[in-house]
Image (cartoon, rainbow, N blue to C red; front, side, top):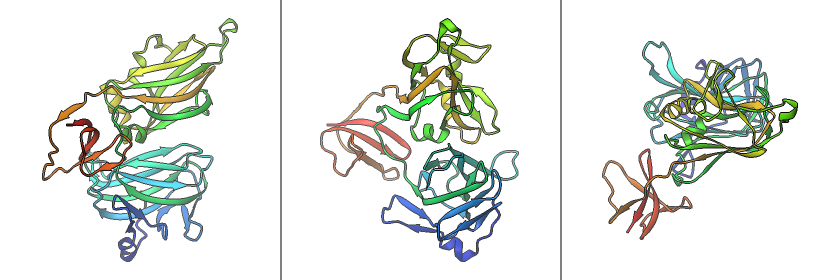
Length: 334
């Protein structure tokens, strides 16, 4: 936990409103709270003296109810870093405020950490933690509202050209990505792959999809265990096709695990003799709701966006994405 090293005046000056009313800057002028680390305000560089040391913003008790996410942008590094948000709320049986971490894997340049909707009215601190000793140069840090997107749109979670192994070359998708995508039961994970094995030489193409827990243990994703061909002894699926798309249908248990940032860090894709090129989230289709007029509840404002994500003040007839609080749906205005 970060020690409080900030003066009252520094805390008061920490958050500065930006021009956009839907964002709030976290000042890079002084990251005066942390352990095993230091900060150079001129170069905006954090120096970590040891693995898993941290540096960030001590807030005390700040209400961020108006925002959905914390964003930290930085120059890419060759090790994992994470953004940790600690709240003042204490879990049953706990002694310290609840902390939720969002991991950014090596090579990342931005971490989007979701704020816990139930307790974001009292945030104690936000800090950046490094898995290795070294330096991280910050570019920006701010709070924002979650992007409003078409709930039926396919969401690309990862793309590249990764030959999997059992750890070093694993693909890790942070829990925050699934929270931001607003996953639900019935959605599908589609893994595009190329089989690089040789069955004749007994070099088989195997895929394993597992949760990386907060304590660094691993557990098979429940929905993956239900896939055809799952080998319980090894926790893998053997793939015989030369290339294609491997699909996993998400159930309620999967959604619970993939949105619990306290229990889990990320979803890992590991294996052998398989190269992954893309991972998509394909939402279960939701019905379009027809409405005859635009009604706005006094205590729950309704916002309309076209399918390109542009906010519409006075929607004419047509299909729109509607946001009301944390709920997003698609409607037909007529």
